[in-house]
Length: 407
Image (cartoon, rainbow, N blue to C red; front, side, top):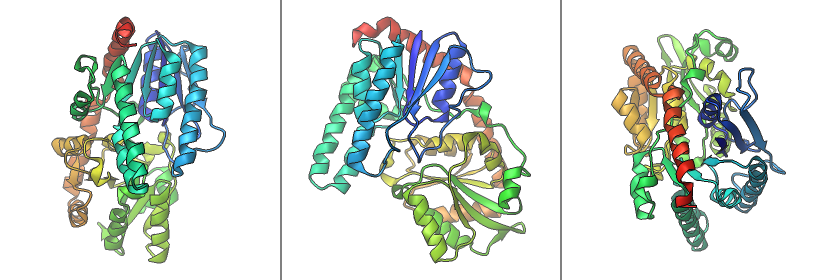
């Protein structure tokens, strides 16, 4: 098949899947937005062992994406859709697989590629998230705009040949929107464990940053104000001057955007020298980053519920380190970490519980070792790309055979 694989965010797992599908003989064009500044991206550059049927086509906007400027971002997302549509027209795919794509851009892509079968890889319920945000930011009018996007997403899902949600938690919403259950198949997200080998704690990055001599709490990934960066700030406040097994505690944040800037300012105001806020690290360097860490930290906004599964947690599971997770307990990431014994989970609004969990981890090296081992064992058993690609390939083949049913 000629497969257009579109992932707006350029994340590590979709491009890994695209490479695997190309290695199986399919001709795959993988597209992503090359103008993002606040998203850690995967291995998107050409690799020496790439199959000849695999091509990456970055979609570049006229200017960097303005994530926090609503009107400008809306225009740029439509620009992405139109530029992507031109690439799709030249490629002429047999089937489209699209993930993490803004709804306005997705609408343009769907129209441009019809009647080719369209597989909606549902990573987040974008419409509901947009409605909640817009109601807060723009009284009255925000609710109207939000309902517009909820309706748009529902129409796109109904019109898709297949829908691939990343969790069964999305199914009640899909049912309520009239999406045919026969066209829905869940494939849980993963992290490319093959690209995240275990590394030595005594590595160049650890020595360069001085983390080889510290006890490290690490947060890596997107950090908006909605993620409650005060949890990380309070962690830094309570660990000021502390040590574990003779190693000074450091709280390291690898991120960009408003949440990271807020923490950087607070660290300077309060002389929290051990709160170290840095920019993103390339995905290829994450094995060394994880190896230099003692506890991996993730936070999800309180109202996310089941509507989002943070990909950083899936990458964390590959790191063989315990996870301190502040997310709604009903979220799939929370259930995985709790079920597998890979870390401690608290609600994102429970600051005292978060700090108590951090204390428990600092106090018990055996607990940290058991949790880290459990995390890596789960990743190695669940994330190998071959079995995941088997399922997605079958879905795409089925969509290609039955695309006329809905398009």
